[in-house]
Image 1 (cartoon, rainbow, N blue to C red):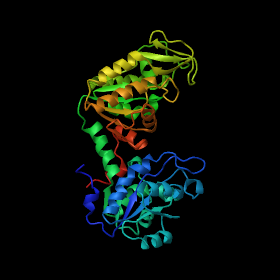
Image 2: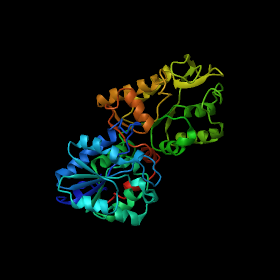
Image 3: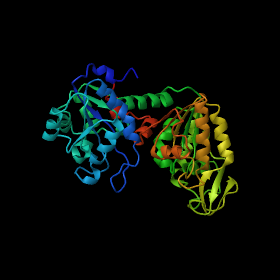
Image 4: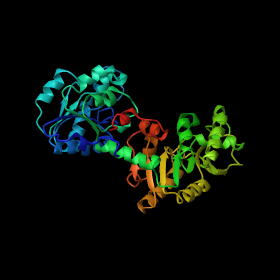
Length: 402
C-alpha cells in the first residue's frame, strides 16, 4: 500500500473540511427503507477517523440511476437517517451537492460534524467526468478522501477530477479493498486458485483470459462451463438443456490453449445436476457427462465435482472467487456452491487459506451459505472487483497513487 496516498498523508485535519466520496448506493424498498446497510456500515470507520482528527466531514455519493435529474425516489435524504444511526451522531442533509446550499451548510459546520450532500447523479456532469463541475463540487473543501472502491472503475467527476483538485487520499475501506485484492491476485501466496461462475463465457471473457495467465488452478462453473465441456467433446450438452454458447466454442478452445501454455490447470465439472425445469425444487437428478438427458435443464454441478474442487482447494494457499457454481437462487441447486463455500470458509478459519470474493451474486451466495463473515475478505464492489480481476487499471485507484 506504500504506493498509494492514505489519510495519514493529509497531515493535520483539525478544523479542515474533508470531502469524503463514499458509496451509499444501498438497496431500498418501495417505502424508501434501506434493506441492507452493509455499504453504509463499511464506510463508517473512515468517517469516524476523520471526525476524531477534528475534521468537518462532507459526505458525497451517487444513488440509483436518476439520469441527470432530481427525483425523490433517488434522493439520498432516505439514506441520511441510516447513516446517522450507523455513526451514532447527527448527520445534516443538504438538498444539493453544489452551490449556495452547500456553501451555507459548510459555513455553519463545527469540527467533528457530518454533512451528507444530495445525489451526485442528479447532475449529468458527474457521469461525464466534467472537470469544471468537479471544481464546483469541491469548492468549499480543503481535502478529498475516496472510500468508494465499488465506483473506482468509473472515471466520474467525483472519483477522478475531484481528487485532482485537492490534497487527496484513500479512505480505510478503499485501502482495505485494494490491499485485499492485491494480496489475492497480484501478490498471492501460491498455489492460487480462482473460482469463476456465471451464465455465459461472453460476459467473463476478459476475466478468463487474464486469470489463465495468473492463477495455478481455474475452476470454471455455472452455465459458462457448458461451453467448455462442449469443446471437450461432451455431446449431451445442447442449446435446449444448457447455456452453451456455440458461437464461443473457438474462444473457449483458445482459453484452454492459453491455460496450458501458462501451466494453469482448468477444473471443469465431472458431473451435473439435471432438472426437469428451471424452478425451485423441480424434479432433478445428478448425471455423469456421458448420460445427460436431451431435454430439461442443467442447474448445478454434482458431488464428484464438489469433491474434486475441494481436493484441489486443499492444495492451495489462496482462493479468489467470482460467481456461484450453479443456480444458487433456486433450492436445492445452491448445494454445490454452499458446500464449496463452507469448505473454503473452514480452511480460512483454520489459517490454511486466504479467501477473497466479490461480485453481487457471489456475495449473495456466500451469505446464503452462511459464510459471509468467514472469508478473509469479501469485496463491496461488483463491476470494480470484476475489472480488477480482469487486470484493468481502475481510474479511481490510479488517481490515488503517490
